[in-house]
Image (tube, rainbow, N blue to C red):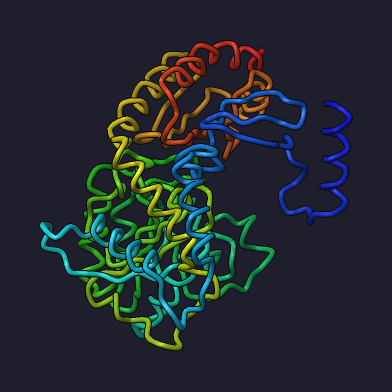
Length: 394
């Protein structure tokens, strides 16, 4: 590590709260799916800010949209509305609830992050008059007190208990356990269509449809957290085809500019009324312009098809090595299990080789690269993959 990197690391430690531990690198710039550190070393970014940088770094369309909007109107309070806010809400509803689908119409509440979108959804469920929620083991829904109440990991929860709400956790993918937990006192079932932070865990076929059936039978809402899976990440605008009452999105929605959205359909869309919830920055015109630009590029460049095809190639390539026990995921949300608990070592070896990946658990690796990742960059990673595993497994 150079003197400049060492100095910046020291300044970071002295000035920022130690909530994330020491940073692996000090990054200084990016272009597409590539980033550079303070020493000028180049890396292929296969994590994309944890599924956030949908268009990679410094995409000209996104930069132009943010610049143009900021030069026009940067912020207004929610006593007023702006055209980008209205257009983005209409666009999200059109993507989630196509006119041809026969589903009930919906409405949107904008936030600054996924956690805040989930917090809004949590409050929305309270307006049903019920307080019981059912969530999944190994789920991750955020770090605020409300979102944390729905997050199963004990290490995240226990330092902050008691947490709000009456929440029952059930094994993810287990229909019988879900059916046993949901009652006529349940406000909502909250599930990720694919569990991201758990290491890209895909549920059994039909699981979400069964969750829909169970929710309807008990008069509960079905709330799908698509914060990590939504907006093209899995090769579809929304990963689940099941009609949910509430859907939360964020991460890739504005390509790195902070935004989130709580989308509700049918009767759930009118549960939050004036005074029930609010936000200062949520839905500001710059964030909404950024999101509209991201959606436009995904449409114009046919990135949903690109994500589907390239993701399959990457999964096939990763699975070819015998040190990989299983590969999962859809599109460019990819997880794998190693035959040994060496994910930290694999991540370190990849970084040394110039590739940024993530290890959510000791056995698991996660990839969530920009949707604009090129076939050449994917091929370069797959070519380097056996040597990366050699460096970790010894």
